[in-house]
Structure formats: C-alpha cells, structure tokens
Image (cartoon, rainbow, N blue to C red; front, side, top):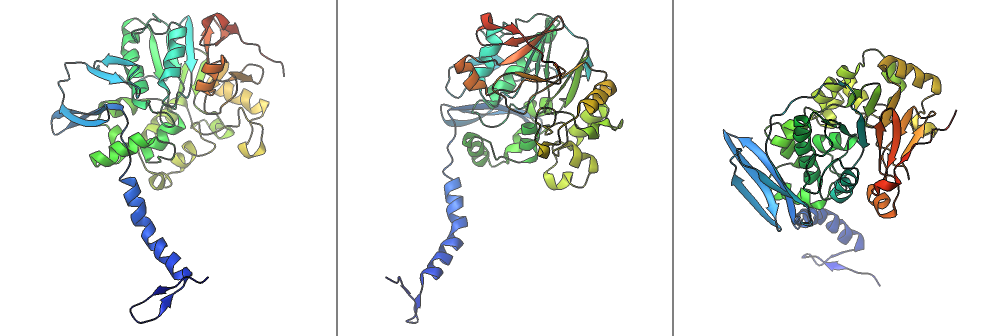
Length: 382
C-alpha cells in the first residue's frame, strides 16, 4: 500500500518526502529530549568565586540549590545514594612538585571513575582512611594515577575526598598525589562522551557548559589545574597511560611535560591542533593515552625492552606505574619494571580480586578489599 500525504494544491507526497520532513524535525526532537535530562539525587558542591562573592551550586535530594557561602565554614559532600557524607573545609592550594622523597609505604590506585564505594572501600581496608573519611596513613603517601571523571555518578565526592585528604595528610607529614588522566583532559576540553546524565542536566539547568564548573574561578577547578601529569617518588615514576619513544626526546623532561599539559589542558581540541606539543601530549603517543607499555598489538606501537631501558635511564627510574588500560588483576610487565594498576574496580571489589598496590620498603604488595589477602607481587623473568 502506498502512503500519500495530500498537499494544498491537490498533489501528494510519497513516503520519501515524509521521511525527509522527519529529518528536518530531528534537531527539534533532540532539543526536546535534552530538556528532559534529570538531575541526580546529590551533586556538588561546586564552589564559585565571581564578582567578589563566594557561592555554592549543589543538588540535594534532586533539587538544585544556589547559595552564598561563608568560606570560613565547612560544607557537606554526599554521594549520589546518600550513603556516604563528610564535611570539607577549604584549605590553601599548593602546586605540587614533580619529585618527592619516598615514604615507608606508598599506596597506588588508579581510575576510580566516579565509583566512590569502590574507592573508599580499598582506602578503608588498607587503613589509608578511617570510618569518618579521615586520613589515617600517617607520614606515608597515596598516589591516584588519574581518571576520576566519567562513567560513575560520584565524581565530586571522590575529588572532594582527595582534596580533603591532601590537606590532612600534609598536616600528618604524609602526602596525597593526584595525576591527570585522559578523562580529566577530555572533560576540560568539553568531551562529554562518557559523562553521566546528572552532570549534563546540572549544566543545562544552570545555563553553563559543564567544563565551566572546573575553571580557575571555582575551588575544585583551581585545585585540579595545578596537578601534574608525571611525578617521581624516589626512583618510582607515575604516569597515567605510559611513555612512548617520543619521550626519548630530552625536550620532554618531567617538568616540561607537566607545564605543557597544564598550559593546554583547558583548550578545546581545535585550539590544541595548532600546537605540535599539544598534538603529541594529548595524542595516542602522549603520556595520557599511550598503551604500548602494556599492550602488544601493533596498533598500540608496543615499546621494546631496549627503548624501555632508555626511557628508564633518561628519567632515572627503576619502576614505572601506569593506569588507563584495564586488566583483570593488577599486572606487571618487563619483569616487574612496569606495573599496570587499573582494574575494573567495582567488579574486582565484588569478586575479591586485586584493586591496587603498595610499595612497601621496596617490595610490591598487591592490595585487596580484604586486607588479609594482600600478597607480595610475583615478577616474571624476560
């Protein structure tokens, strides 16, 4: 049966014409659909400094709230399900160095991706924090190798907990280190491919682009944009994805990488394309994206053992720790010279698999949510 649509002139449109009309209406339908985005149960707070005033934007029980903020007072942070909540005080923001002396113990985690339950679980199990979300790790160190943004619904609680613990650790003689991951650079350039709907809904209702919530006129934005891409603690090097042979160019010292990434971090992709340095740093062979240290497929440009030795000599390191690429368990490569820390955190937590590692007096201890399962890492030979 042929479907016809009558016109005012007695003619008719065929099905092709009707489909064409639907394509014209598609953008309108997309806008209408976007307007139905739903706020989360809890989100924020986002602390803004504008025109001499401090204000907080947050979501509480599904309602958007905006209020002036007295920065001498603490504010409450809650997870999406309301299960976890803690107070945060604003503290001075100190830009990190790129090299540190090692403590007796260094706990290393990666890619929490908005999953507060899993992030808190491993910290609590390893006595890095206590039941009140407070720092308990004394003068030891915690390293988080990037990727708090995207996938999960508790991005803000994780960032605020890291922010809080950073200050508490410093007062106890310890340190918290957070490094950029590729999802930090994605969000800050405006790529929201993996972002939860609640954050898009907030941006729409406030009338801002979501990346505007992370500019330097916000507390978390100002704090986040001081962070590094690479750091050394003793002879241990930490970087989100890995080091390609391009990094053999002595131009790319650790401080040069950190400075250049920070400089280009908030630029959108089109702006970055104008810079050779930015094209490399944020490209597939850059330290935020390169997988060739832990993947052997040709498309990832796998790193040879010889080139690894050259890189380790250049950067004065004995071991390199990366996240980014997911493995079923915390894994090592090149006979224990490269450790891959990124796992499927929720699945591994629920199934009792490894979640992170601890550098303990030069031993590598694999960590579990049940600390009684902690074990010394096995290192294969070449």
